[in-house]
Image (cartoon, rainbow, N blue to C red):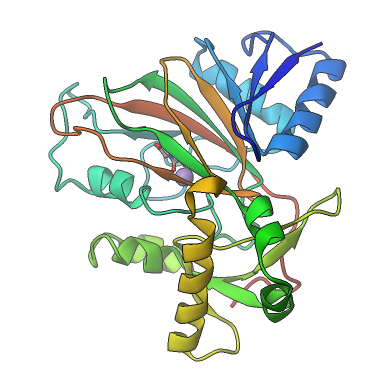
Length: 287
Ligand code: OGA
Ligand code: MN
């Protein structure tokens, strides 16, 4: 039996009693699946594992996404988030790789810009700075549940347009390459997702550029209003990383963001695997 220790009143829990480097039993996987459905964010501490072990463990939850063009790790199943260059030194803040890390400081759901968005992400802390660099999560189930009935009725059938280039342009208009732009055209995502247990969550984030059927300004105003509601402190769990922490989160039930640290003087190295989704959130995913 695993021990599940809640980390926040609404969601997020630590899972105790598991070594991710060992093959889990079917019973253990069932317990993890249940905890994942209940808590959306699971923290496994002291997991000093290799990339291969991370891939192997992640694959128990579904097929992994291949890392997209333009990202360190492209073509493999790993995304490397770091400010360390191939020479082992800290990369200058103007570098594309560092700007892309900065883009992660916007609230987002991984791969919401893909026709079938990611189910889950698993992030492993390999090198962490002495201060800062937390990853923060919002329970979008709790947010949805707290919306007024009037707002729930207003957004229930709405569809957002999620565009990779939109989110990145907020950091730097030149950050997105032509190759990325043509590989990642805008897609449609339902604004409210219904989970297997019948619970619902709000689905937004940095890639959400507009709302289908609304003028741009009107859609933007609605997105901003919902994000202002969602980012209230009571909905947020902030994870302070220790080396070898592994965090698994449900991209359809939480938004997440990186937070700043002294990235010109301290090193940070995180490795992510991304578990692909099973189906589009709307019947016609291509915008
Ligand atoms: C990610 C991500 C945030 C961080 O891995 O998808 O957004 O704190 N990471 O590195
Ligand atoms: Mn992310």
